[in-house]
Image 1 (cartoon, rainbow, N blue to C red):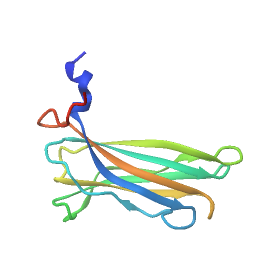
Image 2 (image 1 turned 135 degrees about the horizontal axis):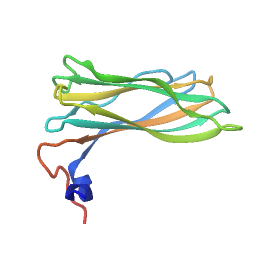
Image 3 (image 1 turned 135 degrees about the vertical axis):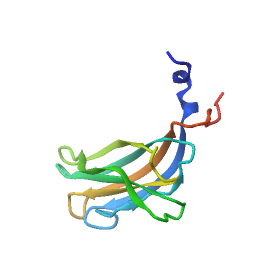
Length: 156
């Protein structure tokens, strides 16, 4: 086994994406695109975006999520354009018998080798029920493929 695999954490860096995104079926945040934070990806060639969610869903009701990555030349989004392949809207959670609370994560991988210096995620939660279901979502960026290692401090 390669030595870096025993300390893979030293080869990646996490960044804030978006937190506390609330959606109510048929109301605020539902079917509304969320703009994540712009981050400087300089020195990294790969990005994993982790979108975590928890949703309270009526029986057979669903939470669907679509996503795409944008790149830009600066942290204010100058020249923003979609980068790479978008994730089409797809059902990510379905309410169980009598309704249920569902949790999960979506992991999206992006090759940044041809991206501009700044990137951000955009995602759209879509609840199928009307006025009853709720979801909370957050996004975290994990950068990898650094030109300088280690990229993070070592925990003892």
